[in-house]
Each structure stands twice: as C-alpha cells, then as structure tokens.
Amino acid sequence: MVGLTIVFVGLFRPFHPFWSRFKEAQSDLTTQPRRQWIIEVAEAVKNPGIYIFDKPPTLYQAIQSAGGLINNLDLSFASIDDTLDTGMRVEVQGSRGLVVTHMSSRKRLVLGISIELNEACVNDLAMIPGISHGLAMRIVEFRETHGPFKTWNDLRRVKGVGPRNVEYFRSYLSLGP
Image (cartoon, rainbow, N blue to C red):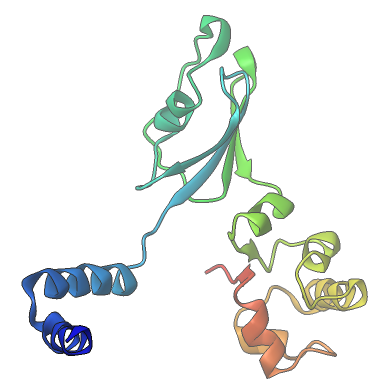
C-alpha cells in the first residue's frame, strides 16, 4: 500500500501547481545571472571596506555605503554622480580630495573580477593559475615590443600560449576596447 502511494505521488507531482511554479522560479535563476558591482572604499570614511551593489553605484552612494566621511569632512564632489564600474577603489584622502583607481589585482582575482591584460604587470599575471613567472614575463615583453593586445589571438603569438591557454586565461583576464 505504501509503495503504491509513493508511485502515485511520484507520477503526479510534476503536474501539481506548486511544482510548476517551483520549476519556473528555478529556471529564472539559472537563465538570468545576477550582475553585481563590487567597489572598495578606503581611507577617510567611517567603515572602509568592500561593498556590493545591485546596480552601478555613484561615487556618493559608495561613500555613503561606507558610513560617510569621517570628522565631518566636506569634499566638493565635482563628479559625485559619476557611476563606478566593478572592481574600482575609491580612496577618500581627506581635504585633498578623492582618488578613484582599480582595486589591487590580488583583490580582483579573489573576488572574481578580471584583470585588464594590457595593464597587468608581471606580478599580476603570475598570480593567475596556469601562468608561471616566466610566461608572465614573456607576455609583458611581447606587449611592450608589439604594442597592446587587440584580440585574444594576439596572445597566442606569445611563446608557450596555445588555444586552450587563451580560453582558460579569458576567465581571469579582460581585453579592453
């Protein structure tokens, strides 16, 4: 009797409204990846750290997420409404103003944010799994000799880099416009 009940429930479960709503919600999660913007806020703010946003934050929003400015600093924000891209570092230097740069490569890699191939130094490239210090030196030397990489195929011209390497490195590197 118990066996028949289990078989009966198993056969009709996919047709129950609850399961169809559950499958729809599950498919939405798998087909729509969620994009997040990761920003580091440092120096003269109440809570320096790394903050995650669901949409591109403005400079003002990033500073407010870090608790605002310390000691009631009054900075004249010339570009307060400028939006920040993921992986940026906002450094509030007191009365000297703001400096917006990229986060360190180490932090970017840990957070899953790609490193710009045409800006990476030897040490940045050597942190990427599969890139030895020697290969990193060859990539930087090639870039300095032949100019910036324009396509991913250009990277294949470096000794020791094949098509599989390029595909693998693409998850850690980005190639700017």
